[in-house]
Length: 367
Picture 1 (cartoon, rainbow, N blue to C red):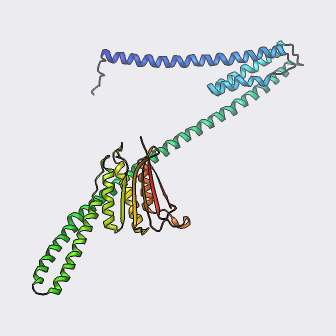
Picture 2 (picture 1 turned 120 degrees about the vertical axis):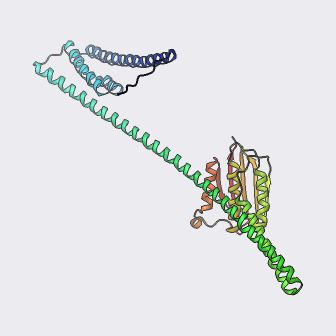
């Protein structure tokens, strides 16, 4: 049977062990000093009340005032010290009354009074210790539930971020499929159609004209596919590139949705955290899509500016506006925009401006 031996301590290790032991010794000495001070304070308070009780005489009972040191003992050192303080208080009260000249018909009377006083004090000790124990248990439960809730919120935020990352990966995957698959297929179809059109041009003039229309439609499909792929293949925007990305998106949205989309950037935007620009871009992208598809807007304005100590991104359209509050609901796009704003520490508001349409405002405080 092999035995494991501990390696000898180096001088540095011995010094560290000595420091740890010395620190623990200081803590234990501090606890001992604190307990002694507490005991001395409690018994000094009992003695002081006993002296006052002796001076005022046995006709004026100060029995209730002994509850102060008893409660102090229970609250600071527990029920055991409370019992000790109760016994000391009962003995002091009885001794002060006897010293002040109290006379009883028999010794049983003094014993009975002492037992009644001691029973009263012990009942107070039990009630107070039970109350403190219940409060401590409640605080522990609140602490545990708060910790569990904090962990649950952190896990939820982690899962939501993971879902967004998965969504971005799926976007890029679909974008690659569109760009490398469907776009290339349409390009090949257009080349074949052009060759067929050249062959038909010499034979059938009417068929050649129809073939040109088909080629034109295929080329439009290629352009739309490339625009879709470009939006889906968007990588993470650099912190300084948000303004340029929004302007390029406005130009692409004008062609894709057949509307007037303008973008104004009053400031050179430079964000602190990575990923913030991407979230702001996606918020603008979702707002423009909602305005074009659901709001039937003809004009959309994207504005990025620094206002009132915060970076403000606003998207306004001239569409049909928001439905009534009773039937408005909360769509998936709005929830995604709100969640993206929460991730970067911004606030999102959607309202109906006086001139009609819909106004989406995302405010990000400057660091």
